[in-house]
Length: 472
Image (cartoon, rainbow, N blue to C red; front, side, top):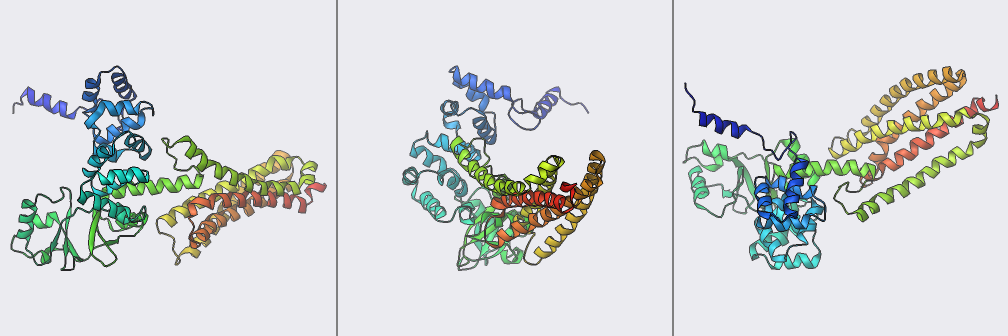
């Protein structure tokens, strides 16, 4: 078989990777530099031509990679290429900067092009007067949908859901549904399943598009639909929504109001963002790093972090007070001063390991009232095994290094005690905070660190005094 050389050339061109992206699908630094230099040189058309080949998500990345003082210039060069899809993909802080440059009418026009959930994400963080100006510039139908979404709590299903969906009564046939999908030009363009509702507009089933396409026209939709479905209450927290999608492997799900009526749907593409946000949020809260966004204003980052540092300073004073109680013993045996940070440090790491596992289990709903005590006992066993292993290594090394078997025995015993306490604290503290309706990711690390530091110093120095080491 002879293949046309032109076809081979076209195939090769199709397979050739985009030169703007590296092997990890990130914009190359030289591409970002070139676009900015073209914009600065006044060659807007050339810059637009290069940017025009990018996906909206990559254009959003371009703005995030540019310096804050370069973004207004890029926005001016892009003009109408700064589309609603680009804004929807953009980092929250960068998007806020750009929206401040736009007139309310422009923001309203962009928001009207988006699904309700994406439009809400753009509008919800605006100042009240700016938000009102944008809403007044929108079409009445779009404005009503946005205002309805804003009436629900942040990070709830009501904020997250899309109002545009396809719902049909249960008495129609598959042919009726297909005809409606073809003829109704106002239907949403992106959907994976059709919701079947009763006369009260309450969902009674769901039907995937693939089932409809493979079913004869005269079959009733009620004979094709799946009656078992996962319904999302409109006021459910977005983290719980994400867990349901993960647990039941959902592509989309119906959202119902307090009366059980169908009011919207949530799709898996939104859930991917939620899972990423919630996972990152918990990790950052454990470290006290605020939002952890490199585009966050310096003042906000400072405010978030300094509170934790002040709190850590307070807990560190507790540990230092314990050390102060044993000042005489440390003066008598200087080796204690060299060794006690090891006991506290290893205990702190052990506590952090347990804490990270526990907070994740709580976030994933793996820890409940029915298995919390089992989790505590499990961590106790692990702590004893870890403590015994580290105690053997540290005790042997210390005894040989200092030529003092008694000192080796003291540090070994202190290691076992502190690692055991660290394991218990790492699981018990976040569980207790969760029972008190406090976020365990926010304050757990402070209390666990204080416990392991204080207990490490107390166990090591106390055992040294009790064993008579400091009187030898």
